[in-house]
Amino acid sequence: MSFDPVDTTCRAEGELTMLFVQDELWGTSVTQDQVNEFMHRFELFGVEGSWDSELGIIYANQAVFGDLDRSTFPGEKLHIFIVDADGRGDGYVCPTAMGWCDFVNLHLDGVLLEVGSDESLSVAAHETFHIIHHFIDADEELWMDESLAEAAMLVNGYYTDRAWVQSFMRNTDINWGPGDPEHGDTNYGAFLLWGAFLWEIGGVELLASITEERGNGWAGLTAALTAEGITTSIEDLYLDFVVALGLSDVDAGYGFEFADIAAAQRRGTLAVGDTRETSVNPYGIDFFELESVGTMTITPSGDLTDLTVLAVVDGADELQILDLTEGGTIELAEGDDAFLAVTVMGLESAEYTLIVE
Image 1 (cartoon, rainbow, N blue to C red):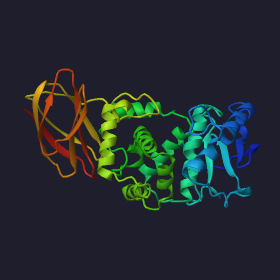
Image 2: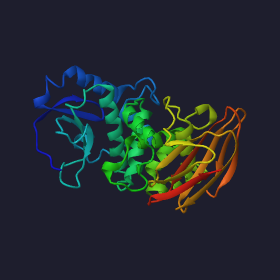
Image 3: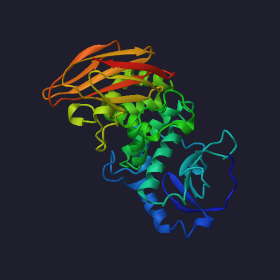
Image 4: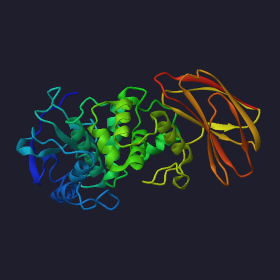
């Protein structure tokens, strides 16, 4: 990737921000009214549904995640450039490491995004988090960094990645992040849901601790949980996330408060007499609906080292979550809703067989 220089002009300046627009876009793709609307919400006031509607994005992100180190910015102000990014993305941080930019700044695509729209402010919230995090913990693992950046969008009251979430909930058996996929194989819907999950279980304190923690990935998250007095193990935390995806019921204690998210799509149904032989990707999740009423014995076999098999039974009186990784029996009554979740917490995919008797 390379960047060609373009002529820009500063069209707005705030307390912490200078906003430049590519001259070729001015008056056509981008107008002064749009710039004013953007700066109003980026610096002055948040929107309904944000963590603090009296804080603009840059101030809310600092209050939740940590202060932005502006010492290397010209005039100690964050520079935002509205440009034609030529397909590089709707927004991105322009780094200094590869010589692309003289100082860290933010580029937003003024062709793909309508400046001042919810989408442009949501992207700005996401990318501003990256800049905050860059100066605190520049080598954080991509999946955690992106999950926190997606959480920043929700913190500021923007849920604009609906299509990404829907794509993930239609197919959760993907190596979405912790399994170290190539960047192009990750899923921002999964990032958003994982970031939302952390935000909703730990609030400001947990997001701030994760951002500040210099350890990376699961190790950094473990340290942040410990710092906040959260004793849940990483494995149990991830399995709670899996149940939340499959159940999506806030009232039952496993769901998402920021939006009404439909439960993850099932790969099929399982009833007494069925055998299912399949595989699951690293940190992917297979969901199967359980249909039979009465006694159901489930026996897994195959690559079980990193595999977990959970049976979730939503009965009239209580919710049951059973670990059937080594097999087990459940009782389903008339009217019970039940599903099986199969996931692998490891860097290799797993082949497995389920026998239902």
